Image 1 (cartoon, rainbow, N blue to C red):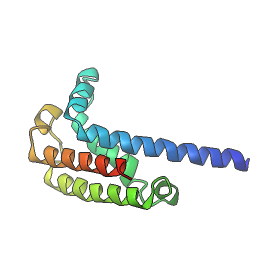
Image 2 (cartoon, one colour):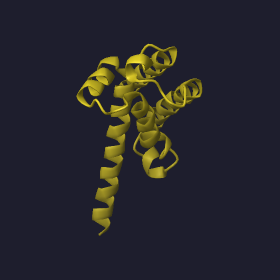
Image 3 (cartoon, rainbow, N blue to C red):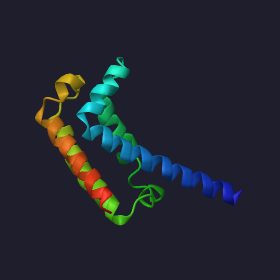
Length: 125
């Protein structure tokens, strides 16, 4: 039973790590966002960018198992990105514009650049 629990915890950590990195990649890429919108026309990609980060990082960032998924350096990178994410949230309308409009805003550019920087820093760790 203990082995099964450890295995499930490892899988949970792996899943959240992958989701966190995938979310940063999506946030960083105009092309991926537009491709996603084209493939899933009913999706509100702009809103999903925010919701995805909230669910893969903000909702779980204080949990020990989540923090242990990343090195201290990696976790600091995520925290720095989150500060910028929160800044962008405070500057963005409650009803985020459709992705084709959002990618033309200063807020989108700030968020995208921050995600690219985070990915670069994570790759260097």
